Length: 254
Image (tube, rainbow, N blue to C red; front, top):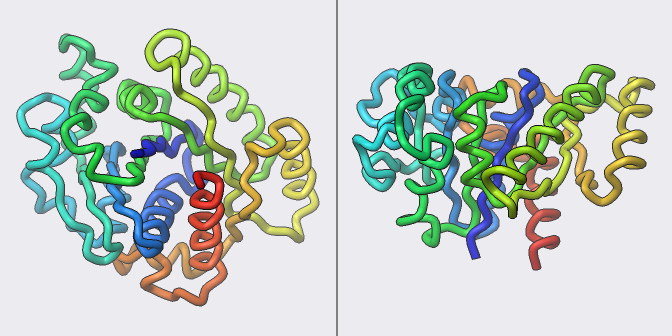
């Protein structure tokens, strides 16, 4: 059965795209069929997958507007051994153009129907905002993964996001659930980070992944080479952490 996972947090710079790319590659390496959807106009997941976004003529933008079918836009991210629905700056105009369209919040969900059974996991890299694109991601997903840094402001943003998920569940997607909270860019020497991590575990319990993603230079360098970290430096702590996260997710689904 296909699991569609929206990777989201309205706070920027918390590792959403890094998580989307590296989790997709790690799950693919474990033999799963993976589709990664870049739903961010910045197109960072596209570039980080080794695809030149500025050369694309068909993207998720065309899928949302209904001018292209999703299978026509799908490409192979050979660097990560998964399939990709790419994005570029064109997507920035999609929100305005979708306003007058029917069922504008569920256009991604509808577009996915013909192909979703071809995959074990579909990951949606959402933009760092609670906008119509993110709403499409949440309406199309079965569950939400929330990457977050263990810092003070992250807790406040998490509260807003949880409330948004509740509203989406009430109005559009009753089966939407929080799959897990992922601690990213974690520095165990930072006392505040440890305190926030403890608070998360106390409040969310088993919803907090055991795997912790460390602050790691190799994770930061890999996108500039258009590769997931495991194909840039598999022995790095960052790459190993995402491999461990994939294993944790697969064990939980068995």
